[in-house]
Amino acid sequence: MTTHADLAMVNLDSSDPATHAAFYAHALGWETTHSEAEYAMIVADGTSIGFGLVPGYAPPAWPDESGAKRYHLDLVVDDVAAAEKDLLAAGATRPEFQPGGERWTVLLDPVGQPFCLCPRPQG
Image 1 (cartoon, rainbow, N blue to C red):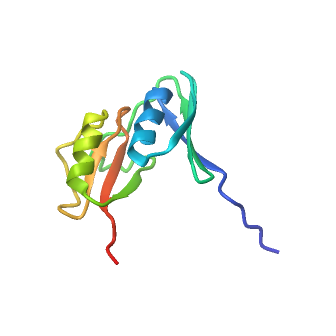
Image 2: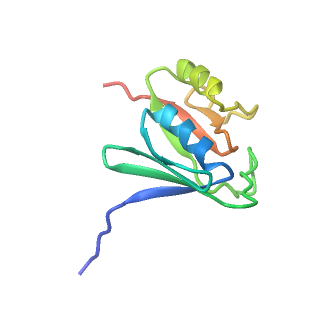
Image 3: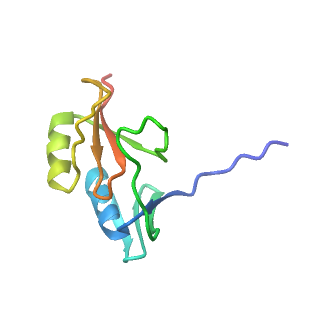
């Protein structure tokens, strides 16, 4: 017998859960359902992302040739340039190193974790 699990949610380590959650709630258009200094959560359509405080949390370096990156999110958007402008105003930063050329844009969220803006596939 093969057991198949269902993904309940994703939890991300953070130095500032409330700010981290607010940023991704803005970026994804999701609802913030819990927001405290130690833990925050956003939800949409039955999927949740939690952000938990980890004392001494340090984001990975970008770029990091040693491969210490822990995760990254790819966000598909209709207009990468417009999304970049909006998310920079919401607290993201744009690192100098951009490996995707015109295929995607790497930004750093408010706690320094990389994520990518990708054009939504057409058709």
